[in-house]
Image (cartoon, rainbow, N blue to C red; front, side, top):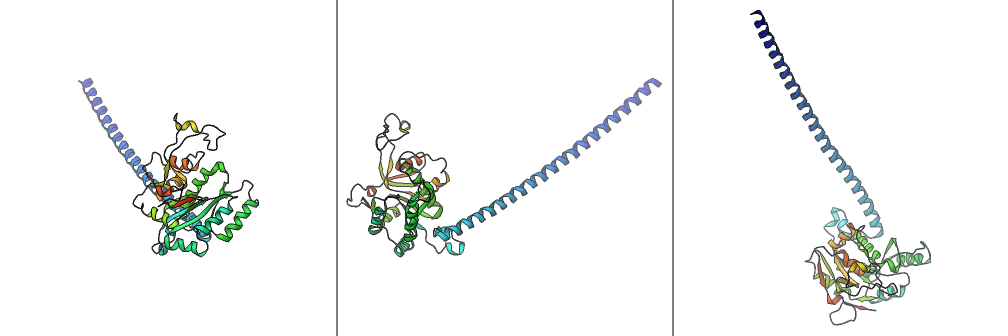
Length: 323
């Protein structure tokens, strides 16, 4: 009997110890869980704080950078009317269009002819901007020999006329016209807030009031590409004037997709912003009109085949003609 009692006591003691161990383990687990939860909550709170602080500091840096950029743009006279401070913004009218006339070093006669024919100069150019919301500028890059006589001549002409966009990061070359057109849209979208951005060749004369009327008729279209739409043969022979080095990309039919003639075409604000945002990945081909057309393939864009932008002849209703 003593053996049986001893066994029972041992069994009871063992069970008691097991319960104590279980309780201690449960308490330890609960405390550990509370500790982990507390740390996670603190970490989460810290992450939220750090993210908010990063956003605040980044925002301050961006604001400071924007203020610096606006200050410089203001000195150059290229401040977008919608980028002014809040006290002035409401009193400023949004621009209808920014028109870039693509030119090069050897075409001063063309520029002078345009100034005499349809592009205002001096105070009249400023009046056109203020009263009709249309900005016009000649667009040119830099010489491959930076600072040479060609560059100096353009700088002098620009100081006298104040009607140039000089793309300092672009080297003038017939082979780089597509890149130049892309850089114009980027520059214009960053410096002016307009409904439309248009590119014109410097051998084209236009009726600027009529161009404005055509563009105003498409204000209801948020993503619009306006021009004299065409297609045409893709030339694979290097000796051809219109040679396309990447001709093989256009299929066995060797025909371009529909695109606006490069003589004059316009795009809406949303498309200019698209070009600016995606500048590093937008491909350029041998010709700027084909390149511009390629940027909008696959996008929800309204292509407007505008007969008034066909400049082959000054026919009734046309807004342009080749010089």
